[in-house]
Length: 145
Image (cartoon, rainbow, N blue to C red; front, side):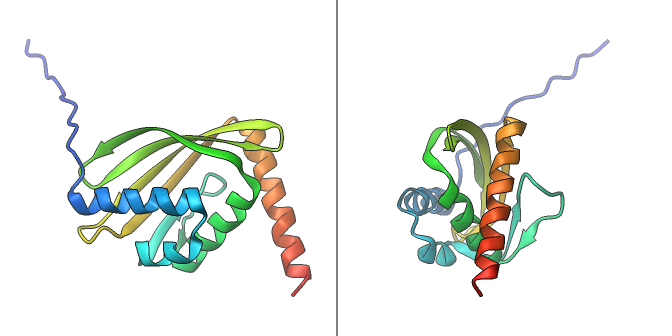
């Protein structure tokens, strides 16, 4: 009886992905959302934790990140895991008095442009509060238009 073994590959990301990650970190830590546009492909895909269908396009992603990072406090990346075209980035932040933990799955193309961002968050109660606050802020912004 033969045993099949699986191997865990840990390929270092290509140099363009490494440069993209450095720029992503700089943008997030400085909230330089205008420069984020240059890091993204036109049809970047953003999978958020609140819905199954992804957002598509630069404006959608930048708009969501501006909103969410306006709510987050004490955002910090902790650990980074990599594969050839991207990274899994573990992070934490505060939403009010509560701590939130998450993972960003980020992919880059051969030009170092972000093609895909998947965000996963926990615990559910804090994610729900984040969603409520985001909805409240979006409604307030729409009422001022």
